[in-house]
Length: 167
Image (cartoon, helix red, strand yellow):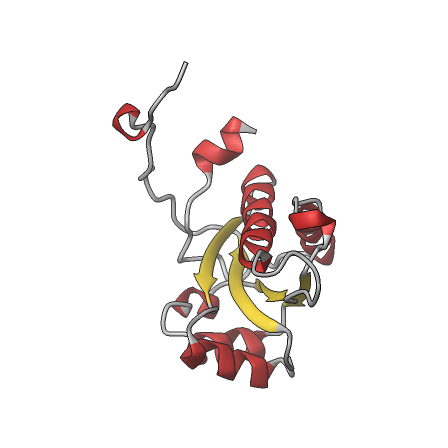
């Protein structure tokens, strides 16, 4: 697992002639649904996209999702806030599901880029309209997916100064 964590990068350029397969998308979604969630509520749904017109539309409505112009797939994570459940934890839960997608993609040789939607209303509204998502459901994020056409260098690293050990 550490290899997927160490090699995962935010990819912004994809090989447009190398499509992501339905089997690969299902593999990413299986990984997402194995994420932990508060009281196992699993407050998420997913929209898997390979249609070029919709990928281009995502790039139009999200200022930081321009990579969807070359991505051959995208996944929209839809949050479902829980009534009477563990209130307010859907962000952590959907974040864990999103991270599972990113790591599984890296493990199978695909690139991804996580673009936040929630809590920015100027992003939530157009995504809700495009995908017919009605309240209480909330478009949480969009993940561009494809075969990478770039290899960015590692940006993160272990920093001992950010750790406090209590032993």
